[in-house]
Length: 186
Image (cartoon, rainbow, N blue to C red; front, side):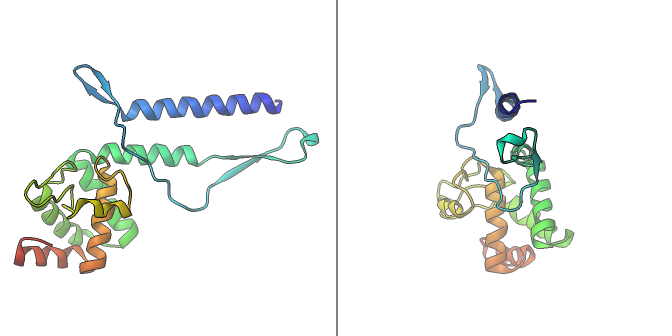
């Protein structure tokens, strides 16, 4: 296969993948499909698996194609869409807690009680009196910018910020829950 055919095929594959991702993010409405405009996917920094393809020796250098980027984007898009519902948000939080904080079921139980009281795991929850927003009820809500600027529409950004806040301020969700029980805030 010549380099130009390879590049054309690669572009077509990326275009098809992007189309599927855009369509998977669409929300059905009475007027058709509504596409969210502010959700961003923040790809993690780190090693990316690559495959080296060499076909034409006269090119002098190999074509390097990242093979895991599409899988990462697809997984992150699925995670965001899953977390838009409370049951999905609970699943995503539990997964992140186990993978990134090594917190077990006892800590998840405390987090579940805490965020159920705060927002019922609704990423659109907003306290008009205080201005607190999202699943963790960040106050001010703009503090979540440190994790992602899409905090208004991305429940995963809110969950990541909330877990980070709990760890930095209280060490564990159970300690944050104990604080909440004493003072009705954390």
